[in-house]
Image (cartoon, one colour):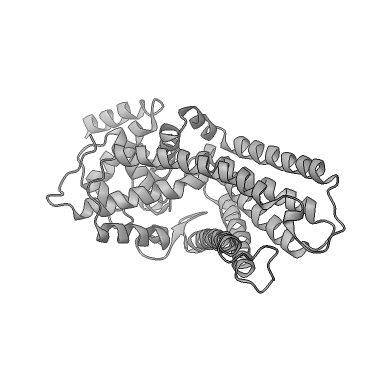
Length: 381
């Protein structure tokens, strides 16, 4: 026993060199204990391994939903000398995942000070749109009461500007995810595995905890509010995306041009989505501010909060623009909304937004892995 303690303490001294090393040390202990095996997908995936290389750790870290339940259940958690804190070390490894697979590689540095990066990108975008509006129209106000945004910026101008940025976002995020997918050697995708992974992602299955009572936030009490606010945020975002997609179809296929009536499908979808993107991020920010500091990596909280605040500002500015689109304040409100949306687009590949995609990839790997024959051991060499 004394020799085991010595080996664990020796491994712990290497933790500062790489979070993957510390994560592997902790999972070796977890693999011997297995008390938390039914909590989430991480621990069953862990039991299919006898050692943990860095690629395994990136996979398992992104499979972790940071619910915090295992920390409060663990008999080896601090202040025990083994110092097992899975939520914290998994968060650290996830941070390394984003840096490792970022494209272009140089942009991985944006994760190191992500709160500043998001704030800077959003602020510069906001200032740029305010200046362009003033330059193009000679004023940040209007006497028009039509509510037509294209009186300020033409449709082609907005489509070109945001289209170019969107294509870059797809490329940057897609390359990073493809490299991550290839590194974890996922195996053949079946329809059953794909369906299960999508279901688990859309329902946020592992934010319900192994018992279904939810996650831990401030203490060892379980709550479903983190799951609920995530749902409001995600589906609010998807409704806004649907509103934009429907408006695009209206414009190009049906030759119906904005502004659309309040009872039109794009406006209804956008309004419902906007409400979800107000309530969800506000709730997530509240929970983040109250959350136990042991439930993750403190240095990543600026990234979390910057992303949450940016989503909230997108929704708030969009709803205000809708409410006052027929007023003299329309140009300035439009500039503010476009500025924060552009800030969001610019930071998508290098901020918190990407965590959902990396988690989906890990869920898919897990679903495939469970179905493979002779699945006693898996490697990612």
